[in-house]
Image 1 (cartoon, one colour):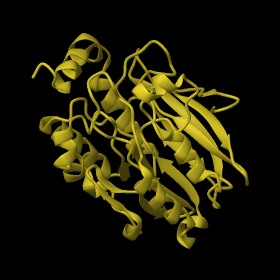
Image 2: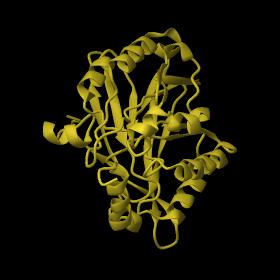
Image 3: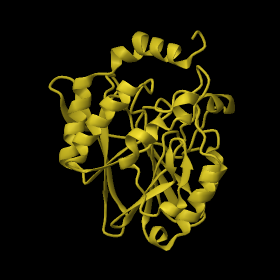
Image 4: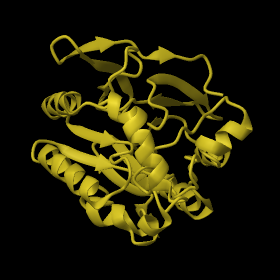
Length: 285
């Protein structure tokens, strides 16, 4: 047990995370999302230690949301915390209803669930990827893998997807300007391969979490560019608006073009949501 990753994760929760995650913030964000959105997407870290009790509590919250609006989820590294959780397909067992694909023939049957999956909604193709794999203590890096990327390339070429705006959901950042050693510790190991798979797109949107800082940028492609936007947590208490609990709101036109990207954070004074700017970077890389 001295080497069990949950020991370090529990210590982190008690010593740091437990002080900054607030249930009242989470409820505020979920209530606002259910009232405002046509579709809610969650880009992982639904749990902290991938315990059964956490899975059950998270599922109850998501079921409550799903009574008002469609919900889509992908896993984060905290949701696939240990090899046993990965091997026993615990995330897929609990959250399969939120990952059902309209084109299941492209999905790879991974321990985290069927990825990539796609939901064809109006002018959008909402595509879920899994970058969550179990890692040793103090390592939180993600990995998409060759088979999932190969399936993604085939999925993007499907006529029903190709004529729509692709909105990709992933937990780890597809772009990262940090040193390689840092990326190997807590980034997306095969981010370059993912970007290569997306290089033929004329447009697209990639949404991710993991870093818990709201940032937006774009990746140039041969035929256009892809927007990349990150979200913070839905329960985090932090003095910085870029980190504090809130939600991002995306509006699309009839052709799937992005009309606007807005961010709303919890106001600690009265637990309302107020608008805030998302920091824009000139380049993702």
